[in-house]
Image 1 (cartoon, helix red, strand yellow):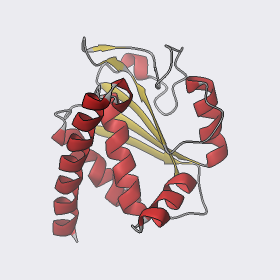
Image 2: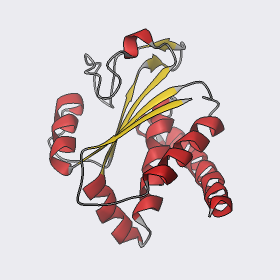
Image 3: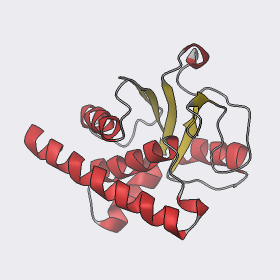
Image 4: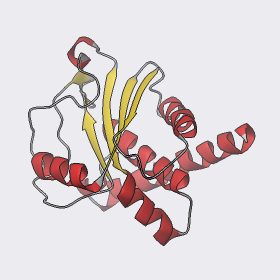
Length: 173
């Protein structure tokens, strides 16, 4: 598994190595051991622009997922975000069309994650792990906006994976 991680945010610090370990654990938990994943950390302004362009919502958000595969047919596809089908601008992996194992990109707003972590009284790294799980599950076909049953299913899966990551991080120190 190959993980491309990049940050466009300099003022807020987080443990990048820990997040990469978390991403590997998440991918293993969802059975994507040969997948490639892009993770991009951005500020609120960039996130707002992406959310407006791909979902038609003119506000920032915490996480966006851009799938490279049709998760139901096992084939690549353009990004959907949560809105209508859009032509995908590849954020991290310029040769993604040549990589059939490219799962997709997860984009996380660091300032929004920091605010949410503060509200929830947890560390930024814990909040980023939650958002990473959420984004990767979207790449794998989970969608809490499809209805209450699907939202519960996704929430249960998030909890299972977060407990698995917590055990891994406790062992790693």
